[in-house]
Structures are given as C-alpha cells and as structure tokens.
View 1 (cartoon, rainbow, N blue to C red):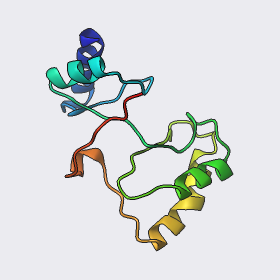
View 2: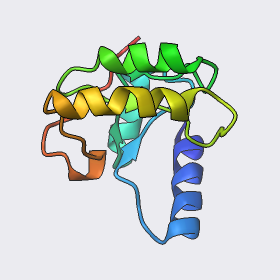
View 3: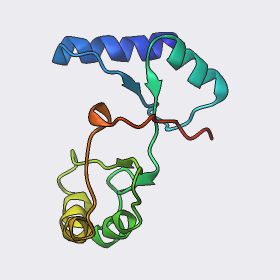
View 4: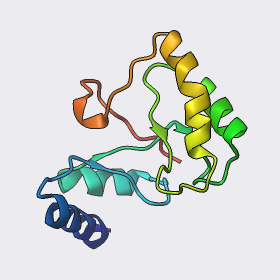
Length: 120
C-alpha cells in the first residue's frame, strides 16, 4: 500500500512538479488500515460523495440527474477524459440550474473544510 501511494505521488511530482496533499484509491474503497497508512505518509485520504457519470458510462440525462442531487459539501467525481461519453452533455444540462440555485464550486486544494473519506 505504501509503495502504491508513494509511487503514484512520485509520478505526479515528476509530471507536474507539484506535490498532492490528497489521495483517492482507484477503487474508491478505504478501510481503517488504509486511512491510517495514507495519513501516516502525509496525505489526506479523500473520496467522493456523488459519482456523476459512473466512470463515463452514464448517458447525459443520468449525469444531469446525478448532479441535480448535489448538496453543499459534496465531492463530485466525473470523467471529462472520455469525449464520447454523456459526461459533457450531462454537465452542460445540469450546471445552469446549479448556478441559478447559488451553488459555489471549488477544488479540494482551495477548500477550508476538513475532508473525511467515506469508509466502506
């Protein structure tokens, strides 16, 4: 686990020249041991509360419906790296209503609230 986290972190630094403060497992699964290890080596374990596009498999209407459920404090995951998916169109459909409702958007690096992973 240490090698996986540290190796990924080293690769991010090599590519971006920036160190991430956050770690999310590719499987989105954490247990108490994983949280302890990730924390001990200097990262904040984080997860998402809204899966907006099911790994770029949802059609636009489903993406928009997922985004309609977003509440303040939610962390949303989406996969904009799949241009053929319904992600972009779903976001385009949902974002105007979210903005009209006064939703504010930020990144983890700019947030001041503590992030606690969902333990599953």
